[in-house]
View (cartoon, rainbow, N blue to C red):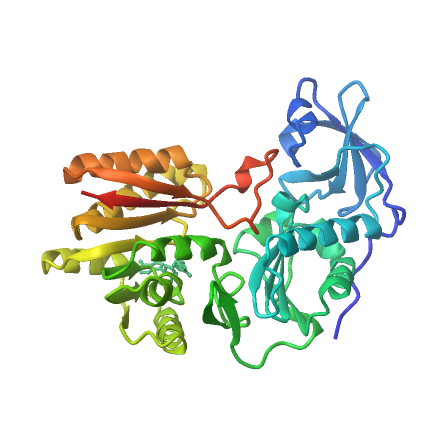
Length: 411
Ligand code: SAH
């Protein structure tokens, strides 16, 4: 059952206990509603806030800018949640934000009982540091900010009120992120029960098994939902290669919805290929072959063997973890795309993705331009897509945009 978390006791009414004063000329991003106040922008602090407490952000000459939550252990010293001096960052405030996020998913038609959707997307829902995914009757909560960890009870109460889930699971944040925030959250069941086996969710008429306690990330790549469907529209009659297949989302969509002739699904993880196999069976797709192999080696081996495909899907993991690794990442993207394009028959379709936030869409398209040059093939970009709309990006925090999925015809 649930364990109570320490509340931010000294500011029960959600009002500030201190004021964080910016250095001169550093207020502009925050008047622009950017939610992250880095240590380097701060001149001084009036008061001594405890971590997780409400603070005001003010210009160097004392004008109110925004209201947020303090964390001395994070490089993001203050996360901003309100730009109105009358706002109280109390339980009601966070409950309302969560309910508003849930309402958006209802408007998007993602509220069917067996559906899976991201219900809260951190900055994209003005809830910096909180991610909530729904898999049918279960919710997976991922917390990347100390202030949100302290408000876990409030968050769970709001989610229970809105959705009456069978269980709420806390999933660890990505490695490294928790450390940056001074967070130590173990994976656990915070409300109700955990599912005993995989649960089955529906996506565009297909069924997928999701292992919530074992799977990667929060169990399933929800962000690619509409891109899988979009890719399937080009698959009819083609031999498809789904490289980095994880649980076979693209493979099964192309085989079943798309009517592909056959699909070869490859992932380095044996667990992933087992999931892909199981999901293919679940949807009656006998023409999907799942194989565990390293993508770089397998791509080269397929090229060396003179194999040809009508469609190649490349959905690798994040190649760039930070800005400093962007060049290496772009070289890796170039390499797999160069070989992937080489495997395509004339008129074949390339579905190529990046989920590295530090690789911009422009960089990625430039990489593709380089591939066209090297491969001496025309690459016609048909669609340039992002994450599904249950992963909104805040116009005030474009750092939230990380996924690009290009669908192109290779002449
Ligand atoms: N396309 C999937 C998501 C892919 S996530 C979907 O729609 O659900 C990226 C996948 O790449 C992970 O499953 C990971 O196991 C796999 N992976 C990582 N490095 C790899 C490598 N070198 N070769 C093959 N697969 C790799």
